[in-house]
Image 1 (cartoon, rainbow, N blue to C red):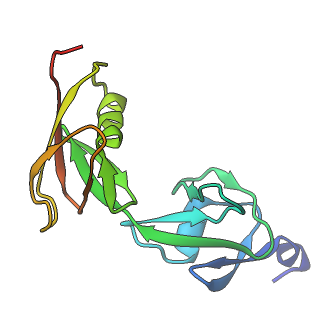
Image 2 (cartoon, rainbow, N blue to C red):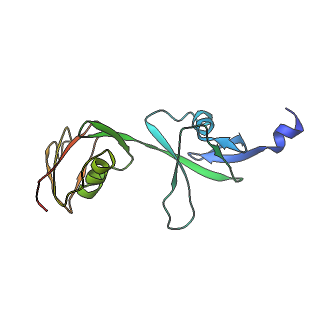
Image 3 (cartoon, rainbow, N blue to C red):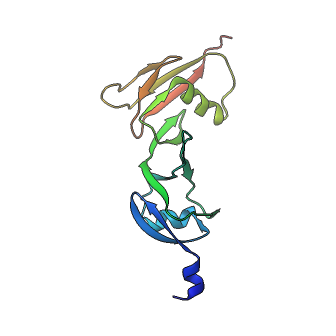
Length: 150
């Protein structure tokens, strides 16, 4: 390996394992480097109280810092009115489901009826009301409809 190539490598940590990566690199390369499976998402740790940043699995350049840390987390596929969405948390709120619905072309309204099915054992199906949240599992389905009330 030439000195020029070595000068552009930086040590990073993915899931607590050290790796040498070219800098800059891409999300695609980081996922491959650490062998992150398709059902997981890679996150870049951020200092302080801020949310860690998801690393897109694409070819856009990412600039690394020496000894920077990344971790992977399982992603769940849920369906909102047949549109698939990936989430990485174990619960979802009424507001989050409605936001996913509106992001996929839903029409704004003050009230929505949110029904769910194919959920985990503790909540296999039911209705989600404003202010409530529900445990989710892979393949869970949500149906959102406007009530027509304003």
